[in-house]
Length: 73
Image (cartoon, rainbow, N blue to C red; front, side, top):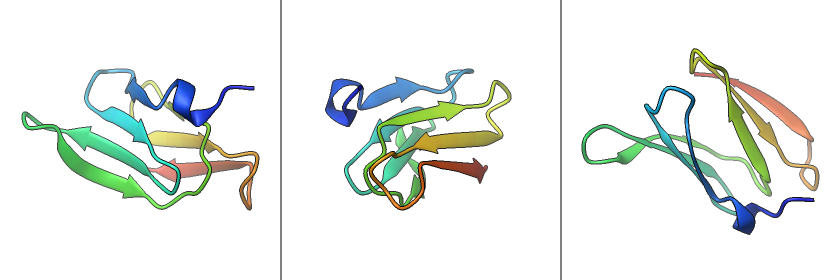
């Protein structure tokens, strides 16, 4: 099993966002200054996947209340 600390930062498919996984939230950084654009309040996230068009986000948190959550950007 992959721990959140092993892969806490990933790029979105088109390189628009830098996705940062924290213990209590997922932060999407963007723009020239890489400032927080969107914050998802989700605990214990181990993995984040974004659709190729960057319209939808899937969070995986098996130790949380719900294992999978789909977010509409």
